[in-house]
View 1 (cartoon, rainbow, N blue to C red):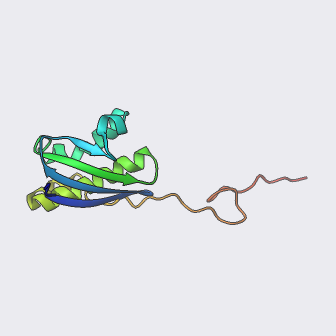
View 2: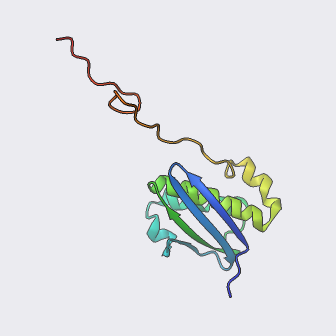
Length: 130
């Protein structure tokens, strides 16, 4: 039986990621795909790995992530947030370094809702003088 060492939930925009940390060799699996396949853009894969690099545990754990909602940027941010939370569960001494880098803070920025009588959240319809 595989034992999860730490579990973390990460959120960003409308994305939610459930992160499970297990003993292993440093593999990261997102939605049953390798990280390089799921995030072909290098910057998103790098973003997910940041908490592991800060805590210098890249090759200590295998990470399993289930993520849904939003786009690739939001999903990468949610994965990073969840991974940071899970690493705190594994070893509480990681807390200060993860907090200092801002990986434990949930980014509150969301898309503003569309208002009635307007073209978007704030944009008005074009004014016609005649």
